[in-house]
Image 1 (cartoon, rainbow, N blue to C red):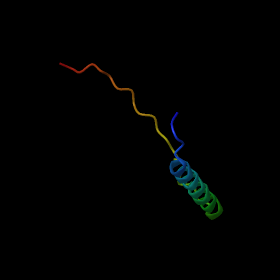
Image 2 (cartoon, rainbow, N blue to C red):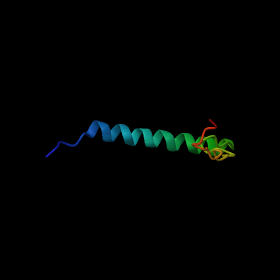
Image 3 (cartoon, one colour):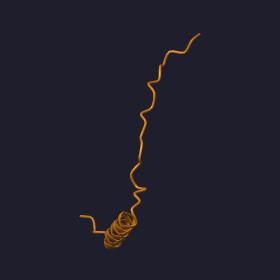
Length: 51
């Protein structure tokens, strides 16, 4: 059985906390850069090339 990697788990928790803190800071500032404002779908591409 594999040994748990506690250092990796701790790093992941710390990164999650840091990200949540940044999001909260941005919400308080009134800006949300994490979510795109306007997302335009890509135009459908044709695989047919004029030959």
